[in-house]
Amino acid sequence: MFWNTTKPLDDLKEQESELQRQNEEDQALIQDENTSPSNREATEAWMAERNEELTRLRLQFGKR
Image 1 (cartoon, one colour):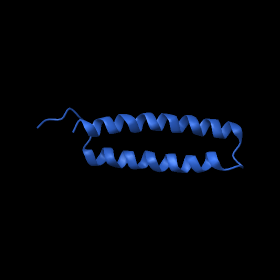
Image 2 (tube, helix red, strand yellow):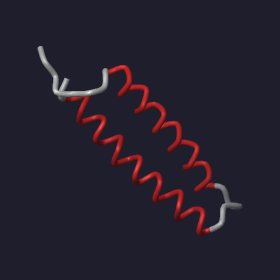
Image 3 (tube, one colour):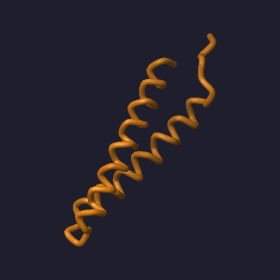
Image 4 (cartoon, one colour):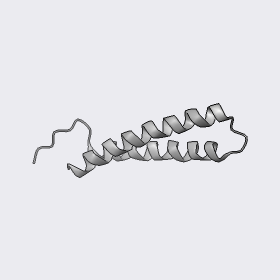
C-alpha cells in the first residue's frame, strides 16, 4: 500500500510527543502566578500554534 507522506510514522509520533511535552511546559508557565501577562499571552499563542500542528499530525495518522 502506498501512502502519500514524506515522514515515517515513527517520526510523526516523535514529533507529536515533543509538541505535547512543550505544551505541558507552557501550561505550567501559564499557571505560574509569577508569569507576566505578556509572557502568558505569548505562551498561549505558541500553544495554539502547536495544537494546530498536533491536529495536522493526527490527521496524518488517520490516513495511514
